[in-house]
Length: 125
Image 1 (cartoon, rainbow, N blue to C red):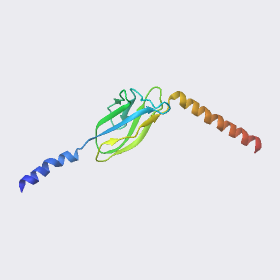
Image 2 (tube, rainbow, N blue to C red):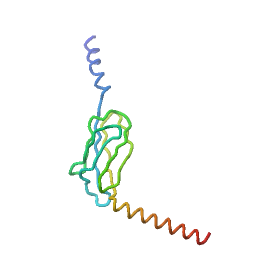
Image 3 (spheres, helix red, strand yellow):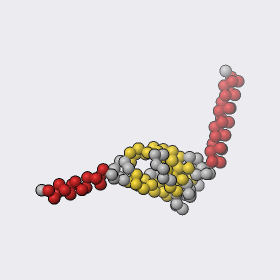
Image 4 (cartoon, one colour):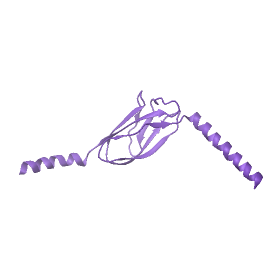
């Protein structure tokens, strides 16, 4: 009787301190190519990681909870999104980032449309 109880007692700390991995891949949204050496980190953690040659990353030893994943790269937009870690490893879908030069084109396009709309409204109303 004591043997099963002792084994249960030994396994209890393992479940309380369970840690998991977050894995994912960062790719260029336009060209569908991997983004190398992008910095990957969780906002509640001091450790920093980088993507490999395939754009893949792994954040090891993550305790269950809610985290904000941040990905930065010099030539790309910054990604930040909340993810939950429950009781298993988290495999994220591909994370697509736009290049900074593409963001300028998108922003300028929207600005031109907004200005044209304002001029139209001003003229007719």
